[in-house]
Image 1 (cartoon, rainbow, N blue to C red):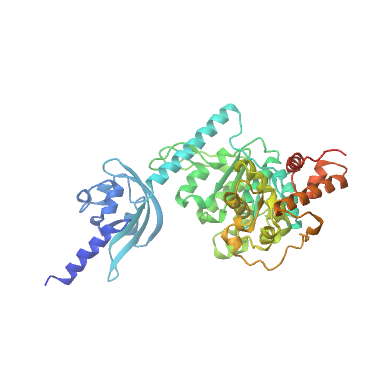
Image 2: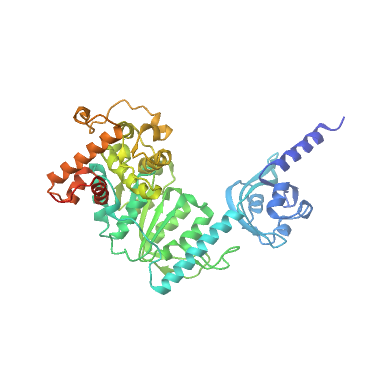
Length: 478
């Protein structure tokens, strides 16, 4: 019978060659003793080109400072997720996310094991996007045009609830200055809409508005994106302006700022205090004039307690604190928001939906909306996909499953039960049309046929009321 250890080693090697991550094992001297098929695929090399070779022979662009394997052999400490860009012996440029572990035998360091995930194509695509944005930045600089655009204004923010109006009032006051603003609000509450509105209401409106989600970019890449890079600073680095340079004179919106690592938060704090930026690899600094609006979807105290947000950075950013209420705290705004999305999707879908049935609205009012306004918009869009072309009212059956199946115990207080005996027998849609027509006529009479005031009383936009006037053949004047 063969040696059980040898038998186990053969199967262990087969398993490592089946996994979808690269595995690279070196001894104490940095010589490769195992190199699986996936790692060979990532590097674009044959296993025989790597086995029994020193890591610096295989990866000549790396040094003792930049190689994660070499670093672990030097320190004997694990290197958690680390992005590494290198060039192999054939000249291929590769980017991986590595986890590197020291190996010990009786407390003696015997080697290092690296597990790598290939992200070369992702990084290349990301670099292309950054290059295009940089080219746009340079072109518009020459033309004297602003390099970023904020589409939303305060007039686009919809709501009449006290909590929402208080947030709008705070944001409008903050628009008069260039102080940092810290926005707190759950996902889908409209943090970027508020940031854009403040920018467009400020003296910076003719300068760039740049938005960056800090959680969307790996930490090792974020520094270069934020502060810019200099050619030769690291493998593949090019001269590229960072977010602060691109947003100079305007507003930089940093969402999910708690996703930044603490070292990068410290560098961001220095820029906020001094207004000075130095690109990675550069020897000179430059002054920038940028207003920072930061945001995150958790309570600041929670982030501070968990140690994922620096206290000094928070205090520097929290000059103006803007709290955006969840939709659960502004239920009276749900009918307004639902009508807004109906008017938005009607031309997109080529339909003429007039509103929600009372039972459907009751479900909207009773639902918790964990995804807030964004989820409400998606629910309306989902209903547009389910409704038949000839239908004009969104019913329960058109709603997403999570809304249909959610408990709906309490009727909507704001909805009065209609006296259907006052209308002739017929289809429900015909009755509802007649009820809507009479409500519009009544609103016009009560407001002296002022369309803007009537639309406001009905809770719809002026354009929507004009559409309904034409549809029902209602005169605009008595």
